[in-house]
Image (cartoon, rainbow, N blue to C red; front, side):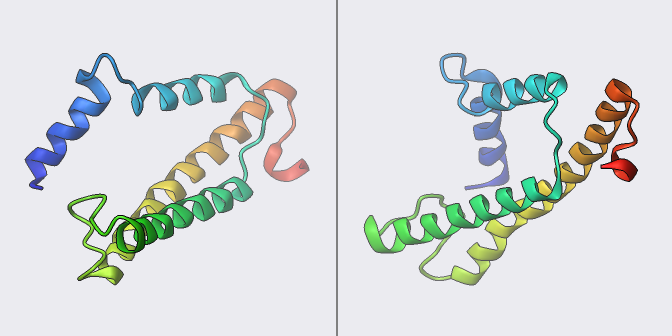
Length: 123
């Protein structure tokens, strides 16, 4: 799959496919909900995300190699390059770490503006 094909697929999944918002609607709803909830976001949330991400990577490997004997994603060849696929799948940890830092800082601001408590010092 070329970069253009991948970009076209992402654009279709997120924007063009009006009958199927499997990717954009859940994240939009979570962002709206995060703006009004009182649940603090901590590094424990990141740990849970990392565990889910690695569970999915291992499930994908097992499903591709042991169950259906074909690739789930064309760019992840578990048969010939398993370590490369594991590294590629682990790239999502960089994104989730970056988002965790953002959400933790926003949580600190939300708590301080709502309660006057300095989240990073008093909790």
